[in-house]
Image 1 (cartoon, rainbow over the protein chains, first blue to last red):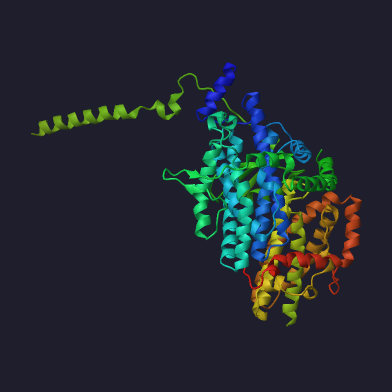
Image 2 (spheres, rainbow over the protein chains, first blue to last red):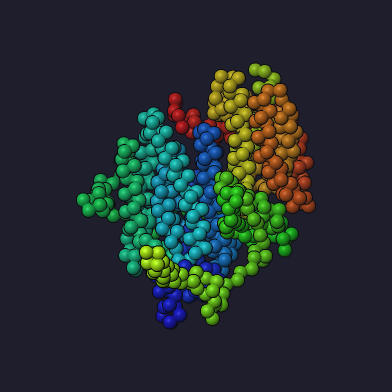
Length: 299
Length: 99
Length: 190
């Protein structure tokens, strides 16, 4: 490593923050772009599983809340892709790479949303898992990214409220509704346990080394379990993992998540990957003329 | 075009940078900034500025003892201690005179 | 049902359905910034529908949700203009938006003059939000003025504005979809 690079590494490891126009090692820039772009992709693809239910929301209040939640996610992708663009990769290229399958998005957005129970579980638990990762990014060494995370975390907190309210209302409802919640939890538990990634030691995770992330994968998962398993249990729901328990030293034990499934899914082979990318591709194509019309006059 | 957006959280407060948006012109930029940075009532006002209009200045040279316009140019604590001591001695001297 | 309640229900149905249709763009609009902006408009319209239904519901002894979801498709009095499914056609979506906002301005203006202070007060609130919708419609119609598909859309859609007696075919599908969760479990609260 060159001295200048070494100095940069020590700077970020000492809590230093970097701005867009500051000098940065090529590796740092490349990792930032890849990481932040995947976050932007995930917000944008995370729109699709819920968007299908915007038309089916069962009350006016739920309709408004769900539309607003999806709107927030689009807004987050806007904020995030702007950060990526300022690092050197234009939004159009990010979207093209997303659609062609060249870049990735989070595992949980490759799965189907089968019932209104799934809508509740996504808003409550998937967003809870996401907010844990995102809160840790408030300390990201790349300051423009850390700054937008404040707005993102603030908005995500509404999503969790909405999700809990959907779930609580169903749990207070009929047996059939409680059944929908339990079935949804059963479906989502596996992907949720995979969400924070394999338990690589944080010192070996390049994202931690460069202080793009401020916590390790297993730390994030433990935080999720600690925060949410008690909330799941207190509603009388069952977590579909017979090995799940909290040890006396406070660490959660659980069945090893299916890392092969995670890899298979995020490399573009999830149950809904192809269909959702196809929807992105066709809607981009169908609205291409609008962007051209706007750009033509702006130029 | 990229527009930088500055947000005032409550009336009377300073505007702080909120983020940026892309828009074809100022009219679209206003509409988009309003929704991206104000739809939850989180802003009392916004400034929407074309990125080109923002100039950044950094690297402020301060090499030769410009501490007269900084706090560290005024080591008052030590002097104040001495002044208090001196005043106390003077008071003693005065009271001796009076006695 | 008084004439006033009937009129309010008619406007509420329009706002509900145009909001529902506009919300189909949330997540797939032509630009990310526009996605956020147009979604706010959809939400405002549904918010207006809810407030108007609440007014009508007081007279009719029911609730806003029941009026929005639990009537037979044939009972909705919304215009054919708002019923059409227009995604992914942005030109016709903006054409509808322009036609609808212009017509809405007129009738909300009438409601603002109502003798009933609740009605007049609500209309004034609605109008303050609609002002942004009109600005949005105007900025887009200025941009698309030279687009043949936009101008053709205006011509095609304008005659549908005041047709309320007969629904377009896809309204039945929309009703199915918007009520499916609600109808799925008997006696449930959501």
